[in-house]
Length: 367
Ligand code: ADP
Ligand code: MG
Image (cartoon, rainbow, N blue to C red; front, side, top):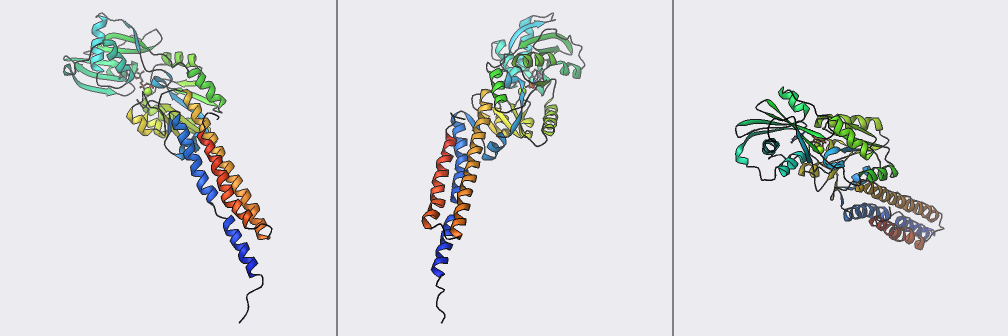
């Protein structure tokens, strides 16, 4: 019988060293942990991220597209006047508020609030809401249409355009023009700072999309200092523009769309990453979005991007660190220069260090 090779013990020892070093637990444990920590840290700030893949996409965002109503503005309209009407202001508001009583659009809610009473739904029939246009309904047997220029054109009603800045709700009663209600919305206080913070976080293009008229869009865009805006859009047009913007990025960055889900849920799901306003936003928005901002604060968009970048940075640090230590130890182990203690360091030691590094992703204060 042949005896064992005198070097057998040596090779067995090296093979075991190799096995221990090559154990991938540092990567397997620290990478998911970094993502969990990132998602956890973000949610503590009121930013809900629905998955680790969205963290990765967020970190590459270069273009941010905003919806106007409810996202850049508060979505709380004040009525500034009723123009070109022979009827009583209160009567026009009463008709409009009743026609709008079933809609969850910020404009509808504001008209109902202005009316001051709970609309009597028994007086309203045949409500039809046409997205990006307005509503048509029968109130007390009178057919009421309330909406923008496009709605009036669609119904073939002659309307008087409004010279004042703001959002205009034309009202037609039984097919006759009955004047318009001028309403205006306020921008959220910190949109300007939020846009500056986005630029600082590496976002190169900011765009506002709205179904509202040019004059109202321009006024808001100028006040908050957004790079560009597109107005008069239907929900479908918003998707077309977002697709064009994604093409213009050419794969070198990602596009985020921020909206409240009212007339923009299709865009929220089409964008590389959809960010919804959680408080004002509709259920459809929260469903369609990848990221939900619980308090509707636009400042949180740049926070989310920064948190995602930090998280990804930690993930890459861990990958490079673990692989580098393991490669060096494998090489030394193969040459017989690294023993079992080095192997244990390359396995458990690196794992512990990588986990400690991953825990930094929880700390969202320093990003
Ligand atoms: P945004 O893009 O600013 O969020 P929308 O797409 O929701 O705005 O609506 C675009 C425009 O369509 C509004 O500015 C308004 O003129 C009209 N509109 C939409 N819904 C209604 C409604 N329920 N009542 C009256 N007008 C409406
Ligand atoms: Mg909207």
